[in-house]
Image (tube, rainbow over all chains, first blue to last red; front, top):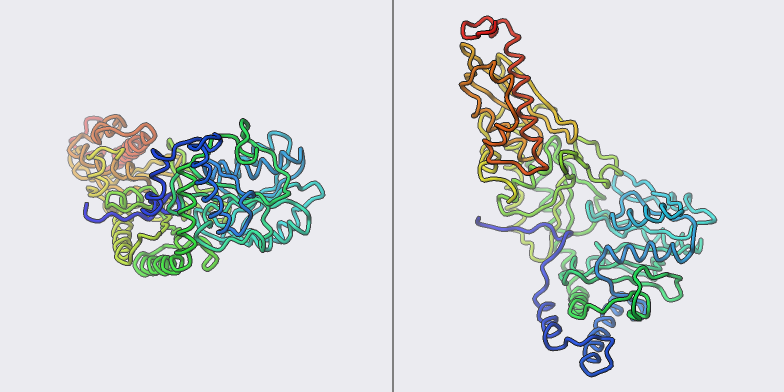
Length: 385
Length: 133
C-alpha cells in the first residue's frame, strides 16, 4: 500500500504532538486525585485549573461555567436532559438532523412524559428559525439545535435561533462538537445557555469533552456521586485528558483561522475535481454555510459501502453516508430529512479533511474516486437502485 | 479486513461484469432489506452454461458474490442451476460475515431465476442436451 490518506476527521483526529507532550507527565508523574488535599492532589488540581482557564479563555466564558465530561455524547445527554429534567415537564424543541446523542436523549425525555418537536430542515440541511418561532409554546422548556452537522457540515443559524430563545426565555443548548475549535463559536452573541464540545475532533485525546453552562442556568446532574465539578458532574477528573484538551484548545486558538481557510480550499478542490470527472454526483449540505473540511458527496446508483471498501483497499479512509446492517439498509437520517432521493442517498460518502491533508492527498483521492466509481458502475444494472 | 482475500479480489477485479445483449436467459433477484440487486445473463449451449455475465448494485460482497458465481457455474447443466444454493457461492468466496450473508442469497436467487428463464425459452428448452424438455 503506497499512500495512506485519512479523510475522516469528523469521526476523530490524531492527537497533536504538542498535546501528547503536554499530557505525558500526568500519567506517571502527576497522578494524584485532584480531590485529595495532599500535595499530589494539589498538583493535579492545579493542572485541571490551568486547562479549565485555557478553555474558558477560548470560549470567552468563566472557568466555573465549564464542566468536563467523558465525551460529546455525555455532554449532549447532560445538556438536553439536564435542562429538561430541571424543569420537571414540558416541551422541547430540537431538529431531525441532530446527532443521535441529542435525538435519543430527546426520545428518552418523551418516554418520561415530555413532548418533543423535531423540526424539519431544508434541502441544504438547515433549520429555519421561523420554524423554531412557530414551534415555541407556553410550555416550551428547552431548545437544542446543533451548530454544525457532522455528516453534511451544514452550519445552523444558531445566532437567530438563540435570539428567539432568549426572547422567549427558553434555555438554549447547542451541540457544537463539530464546530468547537474549527469555526467561531460565540456563546454570548449566539445566546447559548449550554454548549457541548469535544476534544478528539480537534486533535486532543478521546474520552474528554465538556459542557458550558451559562451561570444561573437551572440544570440537574445526570451523573451522581462525589462533589466534583462543583457538584454538577460526579467522578474523578480525567486529569491527562483535561490537560490534553486544554493544550488542544490553546493550539486551536492559534491555528484555527488559517487552517479553516486552507482546508476549505482543499475541500473545494476535491469537489471540483470529482465533479469534473465523475458523472451523476451531487454535493450535500449548504454550499457556503458549511464546515470547512466537510464534503458529503452522493454517487447516484452506487452503494456507498462499495465505494468506502474500494477506497479503503487503496489506503483512503472516508465514511459511508448510509449503513447496511444485517441486510437492512439505513439511509442517513440527515439525508432523509433533507429530502435526498433514495437512489442518491444510498451512495453518500463523507470526506472530512484536516490539518494533515495535503494537495497531493486530495489529487490522489480525486483520481482514486474517479477510478473506483467508474469500475463499480460498470458492473451496475442500468437505472437500478 | 472483515472480508476474505478471495472476496476482495473479486470485488476489485470482477469477472464477467456487464450487459449481455443476446442472452439465452436473464434473471434477477433483489434483497428487499437493503435494495441490493443482482442480475445474470446466460448463454446456453447444448443445455450447459457457456457464458454468464452479471450486473449488480450493492455493497462489496454483493458485487464479489455475483462475480464468483459466474465462474462457479459456467459449464454446468442449466437445469442444475435451478437448485443452486447460496452456501455454495458463499463457500466460493471463502465465507461471508453474518451481516453480509444476503450477498450470496441474492446471487443464488438471481442465478436460479436466470436458469428458469433460459429453460422456458424454446431455443434452450428444445436443445438436445436438455433431459427435461
